[in-house]
Length: 615
Ligand code: MSP
Image (cartoon, rainbow, N blue to C red):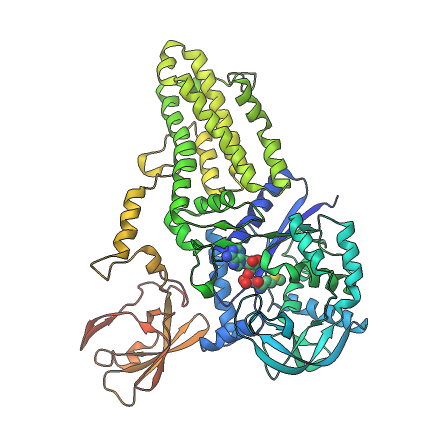
C-alpha cells in the first residue's frame, strides 16, 4: 500500500460563485480527507482549485469589462473565502493559470505530440459554447446540445486532435482488470457501455483567432489548449510542485466528481495519462446531483441554486456540512429543502446531541460527579446492546467511510447518541443520584465517556463544533449558558413566519438575509474623477476594486468636486448590471445618503483593502 492518500475535487469554473453542487463535492472530499487523517496511517493530501481558462471564463470577464486574469484573481479570492468559511482543510489549491501548472501541461502536450498521438485536421461540426465542445449531427437532441439543451453553432475549423481511439482497447481492459476504478459500480457500467461504441478522437486545441484565453500549444503559436485537456492535468501537475514541505506521489487515490463530468474523467483522463506514460488514477467517484423542489438539477444558469454561504451564515457552517453529508447517499441524487434542513438540525443536533450534553453538564455539577473516576470496565453500566454499539462504533465508522458511505457512518454515530439518551431516561439520574449516588455517578461518567467518543468521531463532519464540545468536556464539563448552546434550536414557526412575510410583505423594502446576500458590495478606492460633459449633476468616477478598474457614474457633482474624491474608500455595488447614463457607461453604483447638495458618500473609517466584501 502506498504511504499516502491523495484525494481531489474537480477544478471549478471561475465564471460563477460556488453553489451547493460545488460545496457538496468539496465538503465530501474534506470529510473523507479528515476521516483518513483520523484513521489512516498514510499521509493525506487533499487538493482543490479552479479551472480558469476557456471561453466561458473569457466571456464572463468580457461581460464584466475586466481582463480574464483580473476576473480570475478576484473570483479566486471569493472561492477561497467560501472554502475557508466552510471549514475546508485542503492541503493545496491549484489554479490553472499558475505557471507551475502551465509548465506541466506544456510538457504533457509535447510528450503526446512527440509520440505521434496528435494530428491536425479540419473539422466541421456543431459547437456548444456552454459545454466547450463539439457535437456531431447525430449527437444533437432537437438540434441542441444533448447535455445542457442549449443552442449550438456550426463551426468549421482546423484543429489539433489527440488520437484517443488508439487507446480504446487498453481502456476497456483497464476497466475489466480494475472493477473499482469507477465508483459506484453502476457508473462503471455506464462507462463500459460508452466504450462499446468506437471512441472518437479528442479535439485538443482552439484557434487563437477565436479564443486566446488558454495555454499556448507549444508547437504552434496560432492555437491554445482546449480547456478540458488543460484542466484535467491539474491533478498531476499539482504533485510536481506541492506546497513547501509536502511530497505527493502520483497516482491519485480518489478523484471526486459529479456525474455530469464522468466521461471527461473516466475516458479522456486515463487515456491522456496512459499515452503520456503515467498511471491512471486509482478511483473516480461520481456523486449525484442536488435537485430543487421540482427535481431539476440545481445550477447557476437555471437560477435555482442554494448558496452555501447563505446557509452557513444563517444556520452554521458545521450544520450545513452535517446536513449535506447525512442527506445524500454518495452516488444518488438528493433534494435540498431548507425546511428539512432545519428539521434535521433541530432533531439530530439540537435535541439529540446538544441537549444530551447540556442536560448532562448541569447534572454533573449539581451532583458533584467530578470527584468520581471512570470505572475500570469500559461502559460497564450500559446494556449489552449499548455497550456493544459504543465498543464497535469506531470500527463501524471506519468501515462505512472506507465504503464511501458517510451518511451511514453518521447514522451509526446518531444511533449511539439516541441510545445514550434512552439510557439516561432509563437511569433517571435527576432522581437516582440522591438514592444511589455512586452507582448513578459511575453510570453517568460512562455516558460522558461515550459522548467524548461521539465528539471525536464527528470531528471530520463538524470540525468547529466538535472541537468545542471536546474542549467543554475537557474543561471539567463546562455548562453552556443559554446563549452559547452547542446547537441552538431553530424556531420553525418564526422561520416560517419570516419567509411568509418576505413573500407577501406589505413593505416591499423588507427582505430576507438571502435577498441581502445577492448584493455584492465591495470596498473601492477612487483613482480618478471628472465632471460628466453633458450634465451638472453627474461625476464620472473611476474606482479600483482589487486590481480591477470600474467606471461609475454618480449623481454627486453638487456635493463633491472631482479632486476631493481621489483616494476615498467608497462602497460600490459591484454586481449591478452595467448601464449607460447620459450615454456614459456605469459599471456599478456608489452608496450615498442625502439629496441635492447634501449628499454624503459612504466611506470607511479604516484602511480596509480595496476589493474587500461588505457584510
Ligand atoms: N471545470 C469543470 C471541471 C474540471 S475538473 C478537471 C467543471 N466545473 S463546474 O464548476 O462546472 O462543476 C464542478 C462540479 O460541480 C462537478 O463535479 C459538477 O457535477 C458539480 N455540480 C454542479 N452542479 C451540481 C448539482 N446541482 N449537484 C451536485 N453537484 C453538481 O465541471
